[in-house]
Every structure is written in C-alpha cells, then in structure tokens.
Length: 353
Image (cartoon, rainbow, N blue to C red):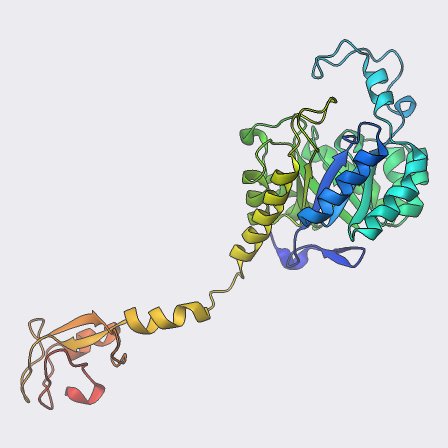
C-alpha cells in the first residue's frame, strides 16, 4: 500500500487518511430501541469513551423490504423481517435533537442511510454519509447521496472486489471525490478468521482512497488494533448499553467499558506504530552508549607486543567511551602496540601500527 498516493477526506475538521489519527466511529445503529433517552445516553458514552463520531441508522421498512419478505433465519425470530425493521425505525423528528446533543458533547453526528428520502431528511444535520454494506449495490441511492458532495463512507460486507469496483465507479461518475472504503464481513458476530482485515490494503491499492474496518467481531481489542496496524484510517464498531437488551444488534455489540478499552488500545496501537523510518529514539541513548561494543585489552599489553585474540576482545563499553568499533577488530589483530596498554583499557586508533 503506497500511502503517498492515497487521498484524504475531511469530516468536521478531522482529516481522515494515512498519517492522521484513526477516525473512530461508535456505531449506535438501532440499539436505541426506539427510546430517545437511550440514544442520548449512547451519545454521552461514545463521547466519554473518546470516539470521534457516533453513528445511527436512518431507514424506513417500506423502502427496505416488501411486506412479504418473510422471516430471517439469522435472527431466529418468528416475527417477519418487515415488522422487525419497522420497529427499529429512528423517527425523523429525532434528527435535530440528536445532532444538537452530539454538538454539545463534542462528537460528530453520523448516520447510515438506506433510501433517498432518509438521506434527504438527514442531510441538514450531517457532514458525511454512510452507505451500509447491503446498500452498496443500490446505485440510485449511491448516486443520490454522492450528489450532495459530502464525504461518503462505504462498507463492503458480503461484496466481491468486482462489486466494490462497480460501486466506486458509480461514486466517481457523480464527481464526488470524498470516499472512504471499509472492509466488513456480513456476519454477526464475525469469527476472527473471517474478518479478512488485509482486504483493506487491496482496496487502498486498487482505489487510492482512505480505507478502514467495520468490525462485527465480539472481541473489543484484537481486530481494531490489527486493523490500525494494517493501515486503517477508520474503525467502526457496534456498541450497546447492555448485551442483555432486546433487539437483533445488542448481543454482538461491545458494552460501554469495552468501547472505552477498545479506543484506548487503538490509540496505544497508533502510538506504537511510530514512523516508517528507523530513527534513533531519545530513550535509546543511554543503553546505546552503555551496551555498544568496542575493542579492549583483556590483559596488559607491552609496547611492541603483537595484538592477538589472547590479549584483545570486543566488549561492551559500560561507562567507558566507545573508541574503536568492532568493524576495526581485524585491522588491529596482527598489528603492533605502540605503547603499554593496561588490561581493561580501550584500544585507540594510535595504539597500533
């Protein structure tokens, strides 16, 4: 992945892309359970945990499924999927309240949109849009959202690379250049072996846009930290007030303490990555001087005596100054001492001829 060729995206003063702090999205989704107070509590928790943004989902069942769509085996519910989705709808009238509450708490307000009407309702309140995995082939929606000329974050769960390329082409034909692509696996929770985090690097190479990871695994730390190490500019993770709450997305989401831990570990991971060059760090200076090796006399050496493996050796300097480097050892061997050298003394450049 050539980071220098990858563009960046701006979301409310935060630069998203290589070389910048990871943009962390706390995914509230529909875990508000239809209660505005729960939604506001989620905002408070996400802000306190250190997330850059909190993201909800805005949809209407009538624009997502036909009424005869049936039941979902995944959800293991006898309730038709249409009725489940309808019960999870976020009321449009909440939008200004949620956006204002996010502003009060210093966190970016985002939402995934699933239809054009919801995008229009959301537009006045967000600085970027999210296209969910199952909508990434919804060409009319992508075109509609992209023409608002705001950054778009695109998830790729259940998609092939060819389908991702088709969606990116649709995006670019609108003239919008502000795209972030997230690797995602459409399974809840996702086993670690199915995450395919390195797919991000393929997206970066193919499309030269910032990439990230939408994590549906249950572990709060492993996948996000690995993703950052692989170059993720965005991490998205579902969270809930409690795994015991009713609803399809609570069981695999992380709880508040886990959300805080995850963001902490992601930030520590970023710090540990450091820079690509090989700098000499200030914390190394003491041991560099103390443990680097030089050439020492290991017994008294008379003037005119030949240097041999019996009277000199390459030893760590300790409190002594580094004089001759180990690379000079062969040049010293076989030469003649120009002075008396006491045991444990450093060999100097003018000590041999």
